Length: 263
Length: 164
Ligand SMILES: [Zn+2]
Image: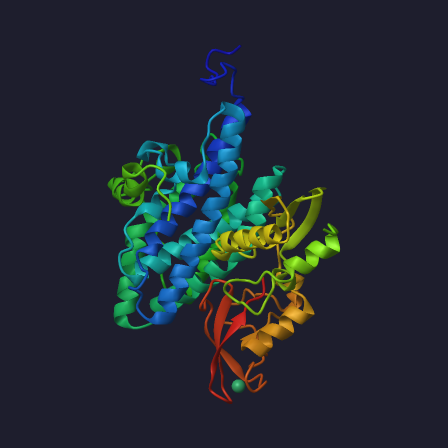
């Protein structure tokens, strides 16, 4: 037996590296959808107009739904290989910051409407490519969740693209805000394409397609694509900004204070 | 008790979508399979319409209640994601019920979301006056599965069950 292989604490048998990789991949997808959903949810009842309040919260609902599907699958995998009793709730509410594998861009504060819709666009354009790849994955369950999610994400891309164009090519103020949002968010897009050791999708191969999509929308919005800038990374491997701790504190306090509480 | 699939199907035709109560779950097309495991035990396999559809838990509960009332002792609800549900699975009867209820039914898959920006699904018929001179107000309506449209003839806003 290899010494560096993780050991199942309860049975003493090795957890195969492949299973471990699949669990982490699934958690990364789940955490990313959950944390962005949690952030977008802050807009509930605070949207600029009623229709858009409903739009962003419906996108949130899609993301939380996707997260639930991924967490349920992750729980099944963990329970089968480690003889544990994880659930979608325990994975969302009882893991610590370092265990979360979400993309950094998802945990950033919402900022103004420009920053919120730009983040949705940069992320959804990326998520669409990832889901398209996963849809053809040999793993049937991931493929099924991806196929389901993809149809929703296509609506998110369309909606957010239109907002980026509307604000970028809008008034002086909306344009200024969009430029500021690009300055704030761009450095968090590099991480999309740096493969984590558990990723099944060759994310580095998606960069060119994503970039072309972003460039075409920016062009229509009369916005400039930033030149080579410093890029942040770490979220995929659990190294987060100071913001994640606050999100988790708010999201997890109920379950941590009253374990097992239900509505 | 006559424990046949047809019997179970007719019971399931009495379980309604909690958000659109004119539609039964059979109209929606979300019941994938009925497996009679025993004389008084049954497994119902359902598929969600949308990943985050908050109605799924309520639907599962309602199915259980309906079948248990009819004498089933064990009712198991299993979710499946493959193949993914599409609005094409909605029955013609269901689409007619939607229209009468004031919600424009989904068009066929061929008219599905066109990725051109700012382009809307066209010719959505107003459920009030049947005009097709309608416009999209918001891609996301009262629930994630609906978009908000307005009729330019009778001026009424209405929900459109989006194609998926
Ligand atoms: Zn009308």
